Amino acid sequence: SSLELARGPVLATLLWLWGYYNCIGFQLAVKLSGKGTEQASKVGERSLYNTLEQGLGFLPMLWMTAACVDAAIATSLGVVYAASRMFYALAYAYYGGFSMPVELITQPNYAVLHAYAAALLCFGLGGGSIFSLLGQNFLLWCPAAFVLNLFGMFVVWNYPVGGPAAACMLAWTSGKQD
Image (cartoon, rainbow, N blue to C red):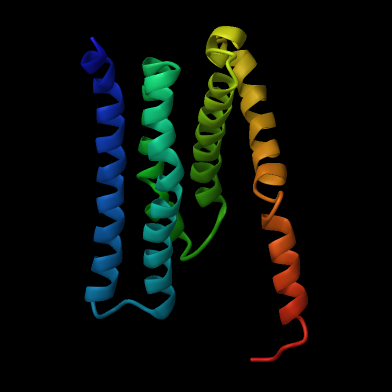
């Protein structure tokens, strides 16, 4: 039944929520400790806010992929995303700011988001399941995920508005002093 197919995405969503609440706990523990520096507070806030920002893409795409494409694959990708995302705050805090451990969590998260987006685009354009078209071969999907990440980061994020908005803002502020 359709309710049976929803169990996996429900568990992936609950895992993501657990990580989200851990980010709240991290932020509060730093702020309420009386020992937190401005940088420590910033890392706590960015860990929480980044988790929320990324969740706006993750949660709807998890559920749309589960409902429209393949619930089992949506679940597997969702668990990978949520389990790695849970360690984002720890990776961010380990060196006191943005570092390679943060990237080791962020990039697999983006790979999942881009796989969801590709699956949903294929479905939306009437092509059915991209997983049926391309199969589920790990050796095929690793380079595909790499290409999807590059496309996402350098094209989807920047066009039509992201890149021009940044260029406009930087041009406007380049001559200003604080």
